[in-house]
Length: 370
Ligand code: GDP
Ligand code: MG
Image 1 (cartoon, rainbow, N blue to C red):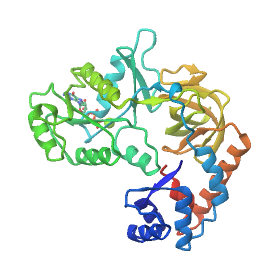
Image 2 (image 1 turned 180 degrees about the vertical axis):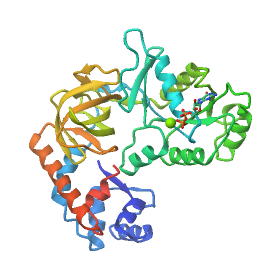
Image 3 (image 1 turned 90 degrees about the horizontal axis):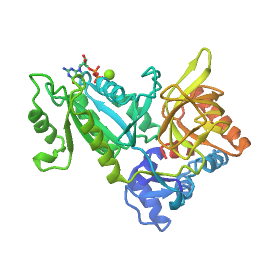
Image 4 (image 1 turned 90 degrees about the vertical axis):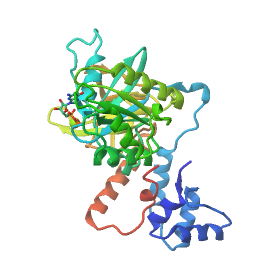
């Protein structure tokens, strides 16, 4: 079900965690600051503080479409890891993404790289890896702020000639806050000034101790430019993915996150979506943030039209009524009326929020990050 931590609830209610804990105690629940409380309890607590949960009806409908079904373990399959590249500016994030992509264009993909849709998938030793192509902590932070968790593994790129820099530290903090495992790619190893030991030394100051120094952080020396170490990096990604036993259920309605979205002159609203669970099909009714739609066409990262998108596949989708925002959650909904109601309610709320500076708490705010 849907939950919120005591800390988050307190923040939303503009109360201290202690006050919330006290109210919980009054309800007979002994809770800690990081404890998760469910929707009903959160509503009760809000009521205890005299805060009206006026959007209850709308939220209930949202709760229905946002509810995660119990997955049958038999239906679960191993899914590809979703990888995000982070690091200081100019340390080689884009170069590394391009190098990996180019090195993995298969013979069948005539014309090579045809599309840049914000995410791409490669295959290494018969196993798939999905890379989110919007590097940088800004995108990462925006998504997290919206409650979207799309990354399984963060690749921290550190230039071997430059070492740990301010944005490297920021990236480390973001990955840690999101509880995402980090693999360090020590880049620019082709440079004469490359000093990987200095990088490793600096990383220890941020509690990242690499394996050859007795820690558990994997560090891979690479050169995006000279194409060195890329295979090794991919192998390490697959290794970490295996340890984390990433699963998804392809036999359920799709759920995913918008990576990018724009209004295309010819095609209308276009969103690149990473399908994270379930399978998205042509014809599916979807709600994406405040936008409703019906999947009219899907285009994969190789520019091919596809009829369905399995878990961890990035696809461009056409058929939305408006442009959603990066970080918006996509859900496929069987009940079209329900989908429309929720989208309309969200649109209305969006308008209202834009009109007034909103001090009132909505349950939507409360549960946005779920
Ligand atoms: P980003 O800002 O992290 O995306 O960095 P870029 O990929 O744009 O790279 C910044 C600069 O470093 C560019 O001039 C790249 O050509 C260069 N660069 C990236 N990777 C390497 C590398 O492995 N070796 C060398 N020598 N230069 C690199
Ligand atoms: Mg870049």
